[in-house]
Image (tube, rainbow, N blue to C red; front, side, top):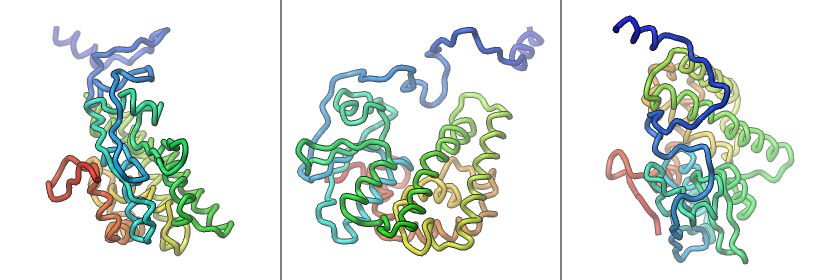
Length: 280
């Protein structure tokens, strides 16, 4: 019996002719992952008094937007006042009818700008950063070359981070079983991305040059947190001490007052002093 059990564990996986959804697949997020879109229940989203309504959670993607809003307020843009409502993704809040109306992709963060008529919905964290930068004329250079370089790195982050989060983070930290191939594959890619950043930051103060922009805001909660040891407890595993230029950059970003405020909002874990579940 033990021989059969051992062979079943080591036998190579052969994909079926037609994939079927196995709801018992396990893993930390098995109860909220599904192959279909749309709402699972009817519930309206709350609405506060400020022009901007943010529906989010303090994950790296959510922190991008709260940091951006806090940076805008730090710059004196009163129109950037916002209500931040907590969306508990582990409980499936992102599948409510109200949330799906704002983001049909059912992912945080989602923003509703009620200063426009009709209100403007904005989803995908990179799109929200770009929308707010253009709306307030801040944190996105106007000069052609600098603007283009900022957008280069913004879209680099949007394309690269899934390998870090859904790839390395999932198989290293959240998968119900650990397998060598996916962990090695995504650890290699994550380290390659860190090397891309480290080589660039060796000769640049910020991602787009000397100026702090939405590119820094987008990249910091993923790669900055990673080299600071705040993501997946993977710092030693990935030898993040090697990336000295990324660590220098991350330290400088993390010390900004708006960043300190933004990373606490919609956070419901860790030290209670670092938690501000909602902002109104």
